Image (tube, rainbow, N blue to C red):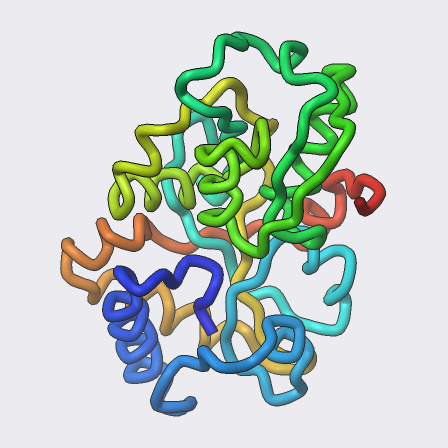
Length: 242
């Protein structure tokens, strides 16, 4: 399952990434899974290959899954294998600092999201900023639209989601602007079931990324696979839930 970054515009590229990974691995399902709940997939004893988020990794999955590796998206202001959240507001707002939005409404995709919930909440706490109401949207794209439509004052979108939004929905992206960014944390890791050897999968994935055409690599923003220790994921702060 590669559903973390799998909008309709990227599904063909994700399919090709999996097919090339499977060809090198020599086994596995013929197609990606797109019709199951994420937690059910991540926690399945039959899991071969999936991408999860840093917060569910440390809060719900570890140590009952095995880490394969972390994609390198070469995001601005981040080391290899790291990402951060862009804090976006409406483009026509007059506020220029986080403090200008204290008391407003914050839109978040999911309470188990590192980039949409945990990272922003830690950042706001450190900055002394608080929101009086919250809006759960279900996805980064819906959070962005909630801000653009005036139903929320701010949202946290990870930098890759923000880049993909600009590439595939530039009209919506133009209605928003970035006012701040959170501290970098390890990016969304690839995982497999507990007890499964991750080395062959990592090797197959590294080869598959190299095998992709430049157009697909650019569309997926994939620049390789890096090794980040589980301890680095577990060290990221987890704020209280909404």
